[in-house]
Length: 83
Ligand SMILES: [Zn+2]
Image 1 (cartoon, rainbow, N blue to C red):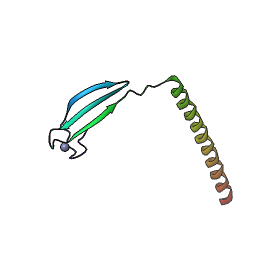
Image 2 (tube, rainbow, N blue to C red):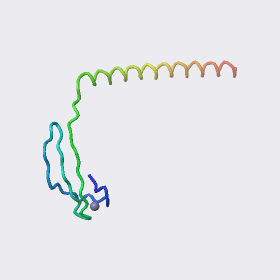
Image 3 (spheres, rainbow, N blue to C red):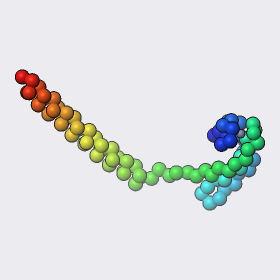
Image 4 (cartoon, rainbow, N blue to C red):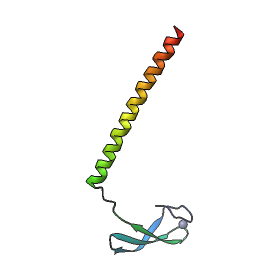
């Protein structure tokens, strides 16, 4: 994490506390003394999300295959025209 003010990475945490699922952290830049707050939370990777991603990947693979086929057809058509 870099300081939003001077981009230094000399950041120290002055305070951190749990707020529900989040962790609130008070931070201070050692270089310019700029103070700011960050919130951290855990993004859970659910099975449902994983299935959605898999379905999208399969769809994409199908499109890619279809594109390949149409490219082949185009190449064949072009070759046919040249002969
Ligand atoms: Zn700074």
